[in-house]
Image (cartoon, rainbow, N blue to C red; front, side):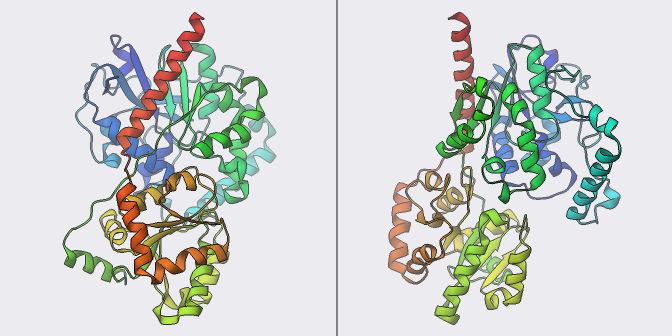
Length: 477
């Protein structure tokens, strides 16, 4: 299989295959210079691999959903370059602007005006909810007109054609993406849509996610199933969850294939000079190998509460000899109680440190210089913090739930999920016994085999080829 990337493929009739990657979930990165979230990171890493494909057989293009269009607009690789670190020059088909082309943010993609960027994001989200609720309750006609059925063949605009493949690599519940795809597939019978399901958290454990996201996932599930040719997943646990929480809702279409792909691991570049590393650590108040690192958004599902309880217990036992625990990430969902507890105990007398918006080069050094890492999450679709820790040669202490066992690959130190006693038993030897830690580090160094994002893209290609081959066999059979 060979590929090339282009900006306006619909006008190039000689190309037999066009694959569209939906980048709707990346829209926030074009409005504000935030670090990408978990799903966004996966999409960006895959795009980086696709962007530098040099072969010429299948055209890989970008598209995003614009609710004001309404439908899908094409998006150029040059415009996505700033958030993936540059792309090579793209071939053009001779028409720079087609009727389906657009740009962020001029295209009308929902965004907040720059004049109110200073307002807290949570405040703006709440205002949006209140306004939507008022319209819904006071204007039933408006509500009825804006509730689109997947069976009414709404005139969604799109650049797709029979034989094309559309893939959503994250955020399928956003906007009206799945409703539009389900409708388009009724018009284009030979049009494959492939969706990467990162996890089933909104359906399996809705108490750990945003209520609006959980409600949207439930409401859009039927449209997703009707409009999907196949699903992709990064772990056996997620595949099992898809079968448990998604497919049983529509009994007549339980034959949707679910194919497993492998997620790559990114290792950030760091300065090699020891004096540079020491100065970086000093800037954050850290000392080499004198802290344990926990990377990820600070939210209830990631279980920072359990980490806090463990560190408070260990500090009471070991006092000033206790190592630091470093949280790297932004505050997320349902953390009011955790914030209050940390503040009331002065972050366990300074033994817990919170670092936000750490540059990648600094984070690489913080990874290199930590003693080991901690990831006590309640539920994950994969477990990138585990594989990233292993990429730096650092042992990861993690829970034994969901996909974390699979991500650990037999090289992580697992404890009973959400059990403080079990976590303490896993932590103490690694904190204070250099020999015990060295045994795990040696085993990790000997047995860890990194997977790159190029292999992730190859898995996606293989999966789509498998799907299309099976479709042809079914048609011929």
